[in-house]
Length: 182
Ligand SMILES: Nc1ncnc2c1ncn2[C@H]1C[C@H](O)[C@@H](COP(=O)(O)OP(=O)(O)O)O1
Ligand SMILES: [Mg+2]
Image 1 (cartoon, helix red, strand yellow):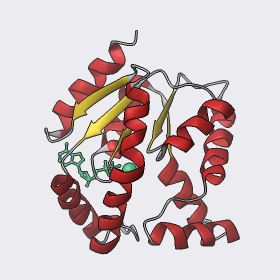
Image 2 (tube, rainbow, N blue to C red):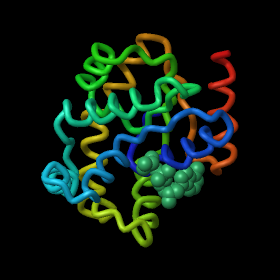
Image 3 (tube, helix red, strand yellow):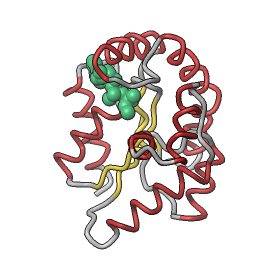
Image 4 (tube, protein in one colour):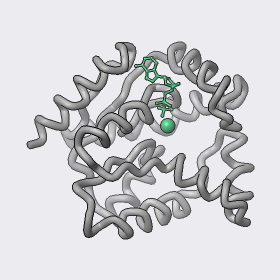
């Protein structure tokens, strides 16, 4: 699942997991868990994330891979949230893990994403939900992550979902895209 910060990926992933039972892997959540563990690696990651930058490619990929291996025998499928953030990450993912069968592109306007993140920042406790970091994350999204969508569009696996709609309507379109796979 791809989309800008605050587009609604986490919200939709939760609903997909509830309905389809897929294993949800959020690269952001994996990284935040590493930060919360207080490890040395976590401290380095925190500094990068606070600046709104991307953490080194191999770090994220290794964390995703470890999490996938841990669930490989029991999972009904994997739903990856917020990865790849740049085309290079997508290429590495395919080399080390495999090709995705569907890319759900959760699309909201820049101003909508900013509004949602500012609101989320009131309660999320996330160090990157502040005005300055939000702006950087959005710039980075448009620069680095939108090309990912172009890359997978050429593969014919992208389904673009309008995320300006209410949550349940967005999910209706997400579910349709998944059901169309079957
Ligand atoms: N379709 C929608 N309409 C209104 N608010 C939404 C929405 N989808 C998500 N939100 C809210 C929930 C969160 O407070 C905030 C960001 O959503 P999120 O799921 O955490 O985004 P992401 O994981 O893409 O950063 O916006
Ligand atoms: Mg999220």
